Image 1: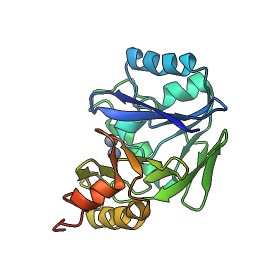
Image 2: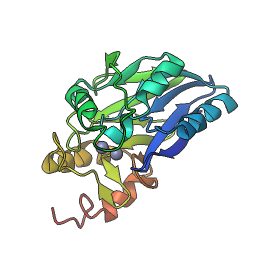
Image 3: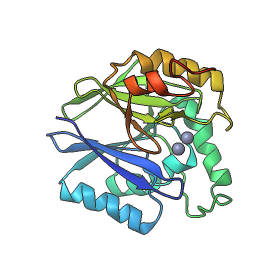
Image 4: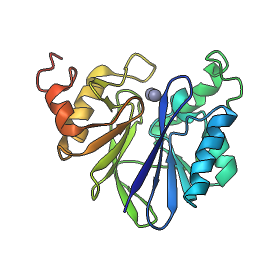
Length: 217
Ligand SMILES: [Zn+2]
Ligand SMILES: [Zn+2]
């Protein structure tokens, strides 16, 4: 059975997720840990559950989602995976990290690439990969059919959607991708976003002011 643990890290209040199953294999999504105390909190959880971390994945590569990449990579020696279209987004973090107040940020090179034509497997778990660009050019969402959960990054939030005014962002692309990819998931799918509380597809289809049925866009 798939289990999920959420942490909220760094001043952007970014949600980091650890997914693991009965094999104790675990994947870390979007580690936003930056301060030592945040790194310690992540490690303490991995240790307390006796998990074996097998992969590091970024849904997309904005600074708030990549701050802990180097720490996780060095600590667990695992492959780091992203969508290929996120390479320029990842590369640019180095340029602006200090200005944002993160002089200790270290870039991590990806070890491989994911896309929507593949499945992602770890332990006994298989995740579908959805391509949901618009907030970032290579943004991926990970969906687990059996437990109906998805790791949504900064695509769909409770009552909102990802901002599209950053480089590589495009509002119409995001609206289209949410409707075609995320809204084709079952209504009772739980959405675990990159910021804020979880929500579900049915609620957002109904009430989301940007992509819900009464949206004016
Ligand atoms: Zn983002
Ligand atoms: Zn974010």
